[in-house]
Image (tube, rainbow, N blue to C red):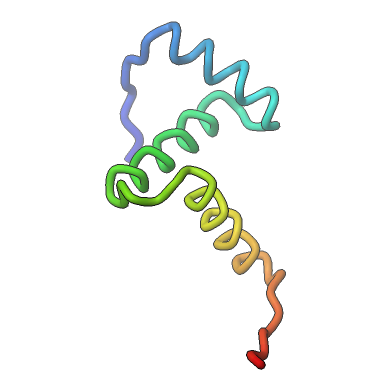
Length: 72
């Protein structure tokens, strides 16, 4: 169930600007930032670029854009 929450005007403005650059709506940009922050808190040793790569990999799997890898 979605709940209405109050966010600072500055956060919403920043999310709107960043969301436009990333082709995301303001709420989706805030969700993206929240997911990155949650992952970073749970895995403090992972750099942002690694976390971002994992999220991209998950979406590639969901889209069926994967292929096998043979070692050696």
